[in-house]
Length: 544
Image 1 (cartoon, rainbow, N blue to C red):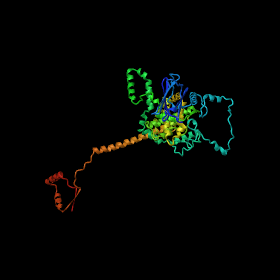
Image 2: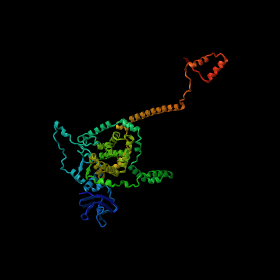
Image 3: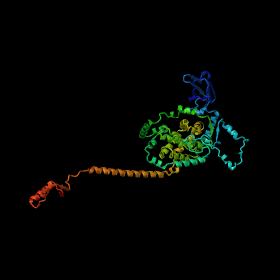
Image 4: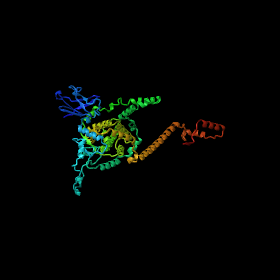
């Protein structure tokens, strides 16, 4: 059977269901309303919706078929008028069975430790689980088997589990042969969690390039626009906060209120025009939700699941900011490489190790490796969590859509993203997400926690840059001095001078003898004086 596309909305008294089922005959349509469930069948389509409250089929109910578009419009009445049905746009939750829904609600409300890792395929109620635990005939003894001989110890190397809630194995058995560049575990099917973690840390240490980091630290012209970028989620949160404090602004003195209004007016052009529209799911997101598997989870470690969400959101936020909100062909690899949950199948137990891992990988793998950029990405994660479950689910649906369409990386949807999309709709708690947002808002990662002595590299980069600047200034000053000298003292050709040695021919010998007469007479002295003033004779004359 095919699950048709559908949409659900409500008012105070009615629930409106639109089902897109083209190419059917009106005579084959069947409806059934049973308390909180609505069922539709018209071959080859089948749809079952489980609502948060009860609905009834009365005189105010109706159904109509538009044969042109193939849309069926159904109107049902609420058993309790005025009751608000929550999360009607979470399609996976509506498609769940009653038992799956009750199991999810029980998991969401539980604050104690969860049972061991089990994926509930058939579904069972909390009462059934309690009955099993209270059964006096249940055998609580642990079965024992003889110790294997030393030569058979290879049998002990059983396959380990990984992925969402540590429930998968075998999905990455051939990752190296398939060209999976995200995978950072050489033997994902046999390495334990501790071995994967040790290998991850060693790989990050080997990948970190101090020269690359220093270059991005000094030459940050391309990084500065990324730091100034404001994400759509940031603009949404800013608008919501502005509206929330509107009354407080009106209570300010006139001068301060005018200043606040001017700032708000400048920001208004870039902020969303509707506060409610951002939380509504698009047709694309609804289509992704319809592709999700139908399953429920018994989470063995709730905290680890939420921390894995932080790790993936950081990788997404870093790539989103690095590309100014426009994904590139390298975005999938960049997100997978930065997220150790995806690349190294990591599972965290505390927030600090989670963020330290995020910062380490963000400074070792992407195109831009800058500390300020990491801190901005962390702020983006805070904003997403501050907006609540719907914002987190929107990001996760976008990631699933991207990974699903890759020939190799689609496997990460199977081992992680699909389950997160289902779990966020059925069992995750908005209170826990908001609590994480509060922790992230006041959280700081210190540079020395990364183990790479970043401050020393930054000091070295500054000293090198200053030295290069000084050398450039000296070279420029020297070049400028040469140019000034050339301008102040231009080249002037010397005046024409007679040769120091003049060779006289036969015809000039008499003149030379005449010139050699004694200069004792006044006339000779006078002539000599006049000749010296008019033209200068050679100092040496050679006679033939």
